Length: 391
Ligand SMILES: Cc1ncc(COP(=O)(O)O)c(C=O)c1O
Image 1: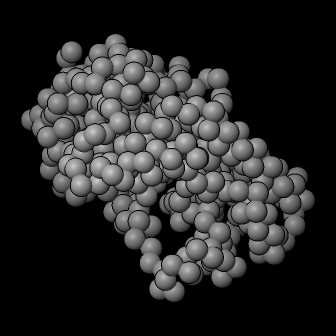
Image 2: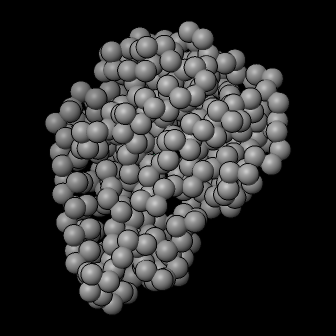
């Protein structure tokens, strides 16, 4: 396979970010970092009492099959990572790839960081959209690289034509393309046709990271995973996580699927620190598709019910294919609204510049969403649906 070498010698060209209307890397990355370290001074009891709709977690918790597998793995707690439930093989078989195509990471977030460390160096750039999941952009800043962040279209989608054009224009300095699909925080998908348009339109050796953290919630037939491109030997890395559909966020397990040479290049920077309970839990989750389907259908139904109520209360929502959605707050800024919800015992998503009049809500259980809707109606007056607008 012909892929650009990590740390290639492409030259830094200044001023690109400004030229394409890129948004502030720092502010996005800093907000992301703050979101990761939120503290609860009242301790566990205070935290437990909150309705948690801020971090796109799976509020139903791990299914019985996963809990059982994790509980039976305690006996290996004294071992350095083995027996591991054959986790790499199980993941490889799940995708029809080889073990050499899998990099197991402590959450998919570690995989995103490893990608940035492998394919960026000071002065180089990652290209993607904004708002999007900011972890890669934060890691770019950590390694003294930079980012080109392109704006979304008016209907909150990723503009593939623009992404292709700008990537080609600045190919020499771009280390890789980052695409979150479906995108966080909007919940919008990039279609399979658009992924092909991107991959066919950019240099054949340009690495592309496709973050499919929310893959399991999608039911739009126009969407498709990018894993077949890995099988074709294209320089594509697909990141997946057990944090969402399998409810294992705190266990820290995810993986990247990529051509073998890319996995070898990336492995150098990986921690190899996934704990034994997480490995057995992940295997159990892959072997229990019924439990995953159950979470998917409950989540979609709660999401659709909630957005319908908000729309009829007069507040537009962005169509989502994930376990979260965004609602338009009209002319209100999101930060003070987040504080109002917090006072009512509900944690909701952080600001995502430049969409500062939108609020991201993770989808929880029926009880969670009932409390959310009650609070929303207390905070926001009813408007006629016709005047809500889509802004
Ligand atoms: C788009 C996206 N990618 C990756 C992650 C990282 O998740 P984890 O490290 O828990 O797998 C998240 C977490 O919210 C996310 O939203």
